[in-house]
Length: 411
Image (cartoon, rainbow, N blue to C red; front, top):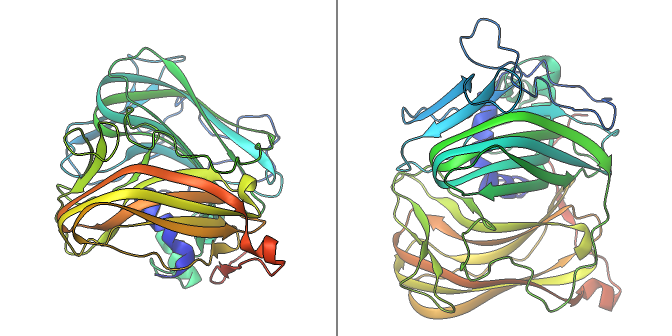
């Protein structure tokens, strides 16, 4: 797989699967929408899709093909107006992020600003985690699909790309998880910076678990960016590094393999009383699987970062666990050294990875992962991301590391 696509495939396999089956979204706002206005179409789900019994116009659902998940347009439990939408799931045998979504084109009028996605949610019998999410991309294929009014796979064919060689880079991302079993209507909000070169923004609301979640009165608005504070040195920037909390600080990359598990373990740990246990799964091929926390890249420009964790392996075969830092710009992914991989049977062992961050990086992500499915068991605990100090290229006054460019972009 070309390197510029790796971060996106790691993090956003469910999102890409949804996009492949998405309608052309001809009703979505086009570039030039006034700042401060709601950039979403049909934000209250009041308008139905012509010719469809229940689908709201301008929105899409994740096409899992499972008969254990149900999407609907609800007229009984609403926050305002006549309708809300819901997603309900009955099984986690196949791990998937079931969600409602809307995708729009953005252009220079949004670059350098912050986009905030707000939506009202209501949980009924939630067991697991629900979420709201905003994602920003440089994505030539999706941009042209919307412009041409065709599905994504048609645009991909027209442009001469294949699924594993797409010119797509994630430039902004913020997900908010919530796990309260029962709630009344609660307002949720996530914000991401829109880097120059970004042309696609997607908003999503969904569930990773069982139960039902409803969504209503969504909004997407632009505002002047809020400059992030400088990153402190020699301080662990990972939230809930020992997994002692409810897990909502962490994002998971879990391919839809039956039986694959990433779960908190209170019987095996390195520090505290909890670790993360990865095991199981069946599939004819392997995919990178693990946990991540993502950060605005701007505070790390000119800095050297180190990510580390303690791992334990029990008869782990073909899993090859490792930690790594990914950093991206709209032009592509930062070139970094290969990560050291482990396996077999190991007692608790600390592993690490270091990377210099040049100016222009939009997104930094700290990954803790392995290749799944694999025989055996793997545990992660006491994860860390810290700023060690100035980057080597700053101290040595040499050229910053470069990025791998995207394959042929269409503007």
